[in-house]
Length: 275
Ligand code: C2E
Ligand code: CA
Ligand code: CA
Image 1 (cartoon, rainbow, N blue to C red):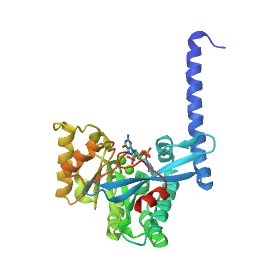
Image 2 (cartoon, rainbow, N blue to C red; image 1 turned 180 degrees about the vertical axis):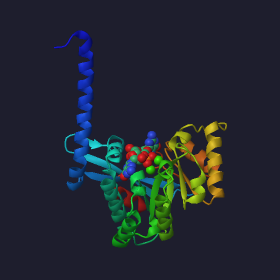
Image 3 (spheres, helix red, strand yellow; image 1 turned 90 degrees about the vertical axis):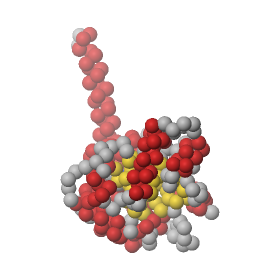
Image 4 (cartoon, protein in one colour; image 1 turned 120 degrees about the vertical axis):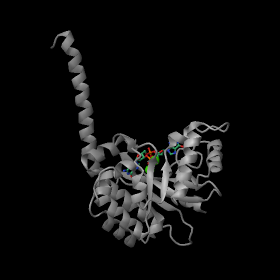
């Protein structure tokens, strides 16, 4: 055994080892989880602030882990991104979301499905071909697929992602910037990319008060005028109260997403909402 002073370090090391082991075990479990069908998607409504219509749904991945129960994306997406496993995992999400939304086709006016793309997926050659194949196989019309990318995906000087996004937009696929306003906002990409929508991070919405205009409301109002001047739509995320929804509507924001409109839920519940 070690002396008292060293003992603390041993405890610290043991904890770090355990964390590292958990990370390694979780990482190794991702491919097997994919094979065994442990991942599934919930869908959260994107609702028109003008007329309350269901415009789209965002696909959000969950993992029903055999020992740990249901894991949220924050518990494994980071790991998957660091290890490159986000490519097969994200590929599965994209395919599943297109399959489900494709099955809604028929009467017209069905919501689009919005899928999160990790930086690595955007930079991967073959993305455009995969999306084109998926749309063909699932029968999902391109304008009913939206891809959500983050500002950080656009930070590298690489030409490949820009070309890929242009080709996707030419197909008719919608391109949204996720968590707009929280990243490194070099707005040049709004000029260079075929973006169709800005999704404004919930942290701006959280500051909205029904009373006098606050800084967050002024920021939101300027984001909305910027977006509309560029012919983009704006979805506000994290809308939790009727008061926030009303302020956002008054500002001119197009759509809202958040607990006020609906939590993420299984595909069959979304189908029921469509009536
Ligand atoms: P995000 O893209 O910003 O997704 C919105 C998150 O906000 C979701 O958390 C959603 O459940 C949560 N949310 C929705 N409404 C409200 C609200 O009114 N209040 C609050 N406080 N939160 C709300 P979730 O499902 O845990 O996802 C977390 C993040 O994980 C997502 O953030 C996204 O960055 C990532 N993610 C989820 N699915 C995927 C995926 O398939 N691929 C990739 N690359 N990332 C994903
Ligand atoms: Ca998102
Ligand atoms: Ca977001």
